[in-house]
Amino acid sequence: MVPENELERLNILYSFGLIGLGKMPELDVFAEIACRITECPTSIIAIMEKDSQRIQSCIGIDLDMVDRKNTVCQYTLMGSNPLMIKDTFEDPRTSSNPLIQAGHIRFYAGVPLLDDRGYALGTLCVVDYHSNILTDTQLTELEKLAQAVVTVLLAKRKQNQASYFKEILSVTQNMICVLNEDFSIKEISPAFADSFDKPVKDLLEGDFFELLNITDQQILTKLKSVKTNADEVQVKTVSILNDDNKIIIDWHLKHNKENKEIFAFGRNITKENAEKIKLEISERKFRNFFENGIGLMSMHDLDGNILEVNEKGRKALGYDLAEVTSLNLRDLVPEVNQYQINPYLERIETLGEDSGMMVMKHKNGEWIYWLYNNMLEKDPQGRQYVVSTALNLTERIVLEKDLLTTKQILEQTSAVAQVGGWEADLANNKIFWSGSTRNIHGVNKDFIPTMENVFSFFDPVDSEFLAQSFQNAVSTGEPYDFELKLHKPNNENIWVRIKGIPEFIDGKCDRVFGIIQDIDQSKNLYLDLGMQEAMLQTFVNHVPASVAMFGNDMNVLALSQQWKDEFNQHNISDKKHLYDLFPEVPAYRKEIYSKALEGIPYKNTK
Image 1 (tube, rainbow, N blue to C red):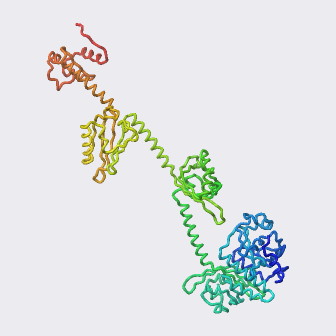
Image 2 (cartoon, helix red, strand yellow):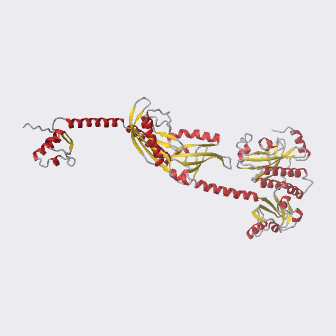
Image 3 (cartoon, helix red, strand yellow):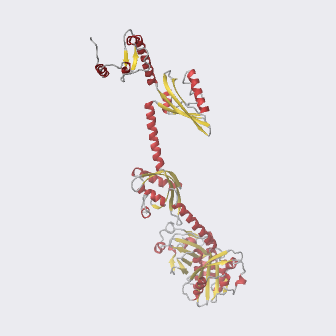
């Protein structure tokens, strides 16, 4: 892959003497700064020739030349803007690249080295071994560094290394300085000086430690150790500015024994540190919320693998901390409900959220009902996972089922007993009838009882009486209990018992509730028995014979007038028992009476 101006570009490389160049140590500082800016372990500065990419400087990798067809930088040359590939294993341009595969390179960011006419001489790139992403600021810094590299390349035989470094200092936003071995400041970047609100000239030859206001002896000792340490020294310093604000700098120092200089690269991490503290506080709050949530809080991936479960959730499910991370949703959902898992995972991946009711198994097999609300999130590596919050509704659902069963039993019992319930809600002026009450009245489910029509099922006199009793209950709190005839819409008339009980709240009747019972059969039976008893009593009273009726207890039930006259027993109000009437009854007569009570008749034939 070559740009449209490839021929002109190659001609410029020849004219500038940039073809066939070997390693250029003077460019190492740029490669190192590129790593610092982007926090990537590897950077490369290279010229792109016709068939190969020749490396001028590299950090973190040892390369001299790469076949052009195997480079990622060939794509960077196609434009004038930075090219960033977050994950080379996923990008079609690089996923099958043998260099990428062999080096396990997962991230690439490169900028073209453009001359003043816009021709790309080569590239400055950084790579990492895991997927990554640079901020806009980092990409901008990388472009500015590329400009400085171009300047060095074009003037490599005319300028010394100090001028190159000054160019870097003028374009970078990082805190860079060159120190003498006594830690006096030799060179300093404008960004460094600006951070301390001082001009560059006022800081030259000044003491590095005094500028940073370092008083911590451990930090001072570590900074000074750079002169005897072959490796770079990394340390963080905290400086107090004039306005009492703090500036936190992450320093990397390297001693150059040949030049007797110390190169110091600093990155202002004040805002980053504040954001890190905020993030830590936020994460701590989330962790506290996660662990102490009132219900089940958990996380799982889009394959259903459980990532984490809070303490209350683990306790509710019966698992310990070591067990939960080896579980899958399929281990927790009852077998009969597992057909719901794949549709759920597809929904939440598509919509980003899902809510509803789910059933999970306790470790002992007991079912637990949860009301859940789940959200799809991404971790810093871009991997999707689900955060789930759920409330345990098992007890409520069991109670609801028990209540429903109880309600059904009560309704069936009411239907068998022919008893219905009713309620008059005075606050909302509404009447409630149970199903049995509707059946007793002979109306269908669509009938709406009101204060105006509930009394219309009785004849005018009973209707008025019942309405007055209802109003009296509302006014005085006196309950009522009556037996009345009810007229059904189908012209059937039945006896009913109506009972009303008022309920008062804060001295005011809020509702009246009660029952209505179909007593037609028992009432009619009672009336028939009463009529028959009256007829029997009339018969006994007026029969022209001596007739006496006694109960099982030998108490008087009925006596004919002729019996009273014959035995002279006209005043027996205080004597109900046969033996009280006739104390001298002989034993054999008593035996006759006892046998009669047993059903053995006796007839006097004498």
